Image: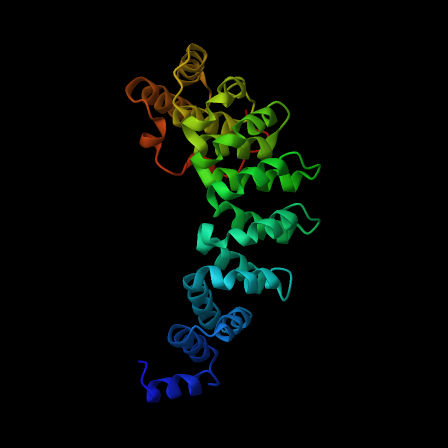
Length: 283
C-alpha cells in the first residue's frame, strides 16, 4: 500500500463526501504515514451524525492508542452529549493506554454535571489499578452521585481495587437503598481482596431490602472468607428468608464457602441478581 498511487488514492478519499469513507481513509492515512492530522480528523468524526462513521472512528482511535489520548481529552467537554459519550467510550476501550485521561476524568467525576460524571466513571472503570487511588479519594466527596459513581468504577476494576476496600466497607455503615446495593456489588466484584469488608457485610445480611440481602450473599461468596458469622448468617437466610431468590443466593454462597477457597471462581464475573432494579418497599 505504500506505492505512490495508493497513497494518492487514500489522500483523495480523505475528502470524500461520505463520512464513513473519510473515517476509513483517515485511518488508512494514519497507518501509512503516522500523520497526527489523521488522529485529529478521526476525533472530529466522532461528532458525525452518521452512526457508522462515528463508530468506526471510535474503533480506529482506540487502535491508535496513546497518541490519540490528548486529542480525545480535549473533546471530553466539547460538543453534543452523544459525541462526548463516544469520546468517553473510546478512552475506556483503550484501558490503561489512556492513563493520561485519568486526571481530567477524576475532575469531571466530582463535577456538578452528572452526565459528564457518568462518562468519566466509564473511563475510569477501564483504567485498572492506575485509577484506584483517585477513585478512593472520591468516596469522600460530599456529592452522592460522585460517591456512587466512584463505587461503580471501583467495582468495574475488580480485584485491583483491593486498596480501596477499607473505605468502601466504611460506607456500609451509612449507605441505604441503591447506594448500599452498589457498595455491596462492588465489594463482591473485588473478591478476596475485600475481606476487610466481611464484618460489615454480615450486618447487611439483615437489611430490610431483598435485593440488598441477595447481593450481600453473593458478595460474601465471592470474597470467600469462611468465618463463623458468615457461615451462620448465610445458613439462617438459606433456611428462613421470606424471599425465594434470597434463600437461593444464600444457599449458593454457603455451598461455595464449603467447597472452594475462591468463591469468585464459582460465581463468575458478573452477578445476575445485582442486575435487578432495586425493589422498593419490599421486605
